[in-house]
Length: 177
Image 1: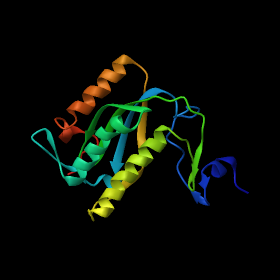
Image 2: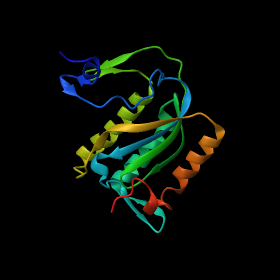
Image 3: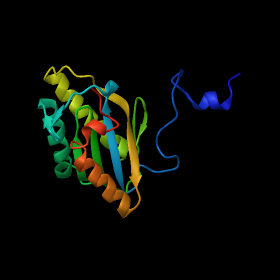
Image 4: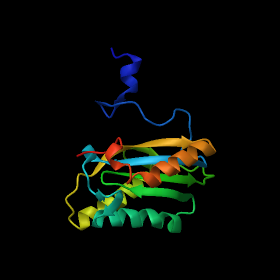
């Protein structure tokens, strides 16, 4: 007989790690979020950092343009700052939402206008482009990291970290040789 802990970690008959999302938080809620999306195995896919400046390759430029396009196409989100790095992307965004509608997909419920649906759409757009252009790349790490920004001081620190990420690349936790 399985214990309750095992049952909580069972998903489609496979064990998985617990959710990284904040328990009890509605990720459709209007709030400021800091998000980091990584490539699979942290393999560089978007360009390289040279002399403290990010030099985007074709896929990196498409990712950057796609982020810029979010502000033009999505009313419920405002990108405040972002940086495409060799093996990850940072987003500082504000989600503007007042919805209760639910959208499901085959992997489970995906809440419409939620942070997860936004990241899912973005990752899918980049993947589709890479596949169409036959770009050899590692794909995405299946999860993403998020942090709910709750103070002005935290916002300023995160905003500065994102902007200075290329200058500090060699000491960054995501840096790989």
